[in-house]
Length: 396
Image (cartoon, rainbow, N blue to C red; front, side, top):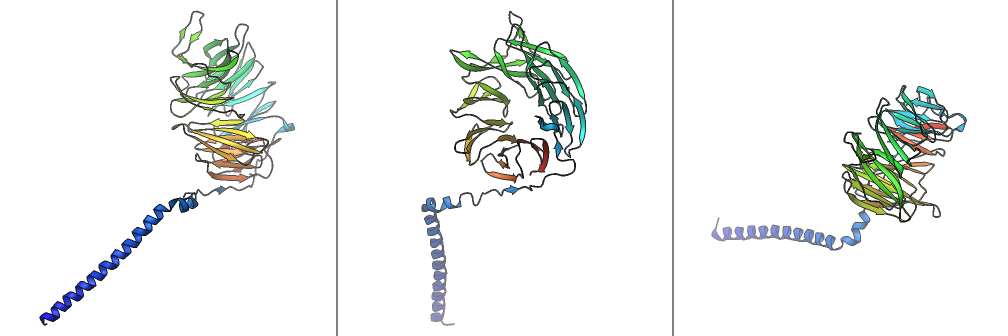
């Protein structure tokens, strides 16, 4: 091959190499330009994708009611209460205490003579008491464990996770007297108060309790929380046990106090919601001027409902137990009842039950064939509380 031929060959190779380089450069330049344009125009196109890529599919459950032993009939349309106990459902009406398995089969029945029976439960047991009356009983799934008669009318009762019972009455000297009974009905702790006791909340290990009282300060109703341990008791000069700690007065009418997250409690009041650590230090408050019409909580989240009857709508506020973050979202219907299960809230509006995650996104729902007053969820079963019947549906 001649030198000139070699020189021409090199030049052609260089031109081809440069052509390939130029082609790659142009492609890269166009791609880079496109990325820059997307970044600078993000505000115009990105919102349109909001919820498309991250949207959670909504599970629509079957509307078919369970057969077999359902519906469970409530005789005479009597007022009744239903709660989940030991993987079964406990039902209390004006004359009987019933236990049914999840298939609706009766496993225990006992008659009672209480005038105003109330049902409260722990994971494994149920406590029935006669509000304004003088008796209470601890029940298991299959039997009555004990029955106690009190000297004074019962105002309030609560049950701990290991079956301690807190019974609040009043006597001739005090507005409220609280007695703690162990799982066999033995009285192990007493406390008397010149203020009304509105709630009793056991600690997670049942070694103590938080007592919520209400009183008046400068003409305003206020609430206070006192913490007691049953195994560490010091007494004042009048022989009354002294609290481990007590909070400052909170300017609200406390309705309920619950355990909340790790080492926290949450107070639901008529005009605010407050969280405390288990040393009695106030962590946060959420105030409101509208009427609180419903609430529920567990260790993960709290949910508050504010209904607007004129506009036939509702506002739900969720509070994260770990971060304290509040999220608000609106419903275009009136919420009849609300319950918190795991990391989801379930709302009921007569004909629908809808589940939402902590972001306020709908994750599951079911349309009901008739009106119900309330519901309870046990595993994948939802028990529907009607006027004179109890039905069941699957809900995932």
